Length: 373
Ligand SMILES: NC(=O)CC[C@H](N)C(=O)O
Image 1 (cartoon, helix red, strand yellow):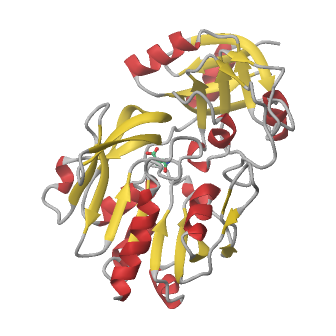
Image 2 (image 1 turned 90 degrees about the horizontal axis):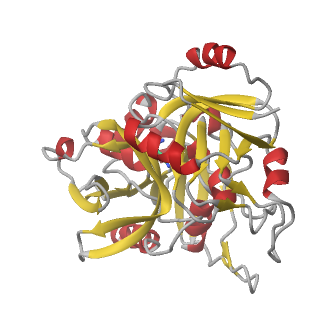
């Protein structure tokens, strides 16, 4: 049986199945990272997305049980040009194919991924279905017609934790095994809209006592925990329908310093009066240039978003633009000094990706310290 990818415009790609056999709908998107596939596959922001990697050989260093960004994968499908069946790395515990099977991810290899990516860049990200159990195109078209897509839906509630928990692990050096876990000085409450583990590790390594709370936790409940700072996480889907989250952020602003990443950035900006929109094909990869307007330096960043905040919509609001995406000049970072709140549209925790933007975690601690002074 072949694996099929059917796009909403009727385009069909037919390849070899890898990973779990099955069928799922999602949004077809592409990622330009050359490595980091395991972290990408376990980033909850990719919930309901069928990811195509632009790099032609994926799986060459295998997979393990450590490099996970959440408890499990939420992606709808994974497509590569060539899946490497013979991984080589001292850290590898299984092949990519085995990893995909263990996470129940439907995969496909052996298609012209350049053609697919050029198509998505030209036409935009699309609703799609991937199947390795049904190759009847008419039947797949019927199933895809029922898939609503991401716009206007709250899918955060599907990936957020149901119960509050403490996070106690810091960043650990892969070679030495040494963990950076300093004594805890400040308390941070982190909203889990689909949070990645490396964000939690980096917060812990800043000396924060981190409590993770469900996405719908009320501002009153968060304030009753007496946090020194509140963190707004990344997460899947459209920010605009998340009215409960936006309402809670509005109530927290001015009472406690706030730091947001990706979906957290979008929610903070909307709470401050801005508007979001859907990008044509999104930004996904570990090699996207961003300009820091504070010092005119360029950061190479990790990105994964399909929505964005309208730069013009923040103009009338008391918010500064701090970062700009250099690929298309879209908004990449904001700050509101008066309310001690800031956020970036990209992923400073990387995982996968360069560490250029890690200073933002130091900045959060400094902001909290200045709030206490
Ligand atoms: N990584 C994220 O937090 C993604 C944010 C949002 N779901 C988007 O696609 O724009």
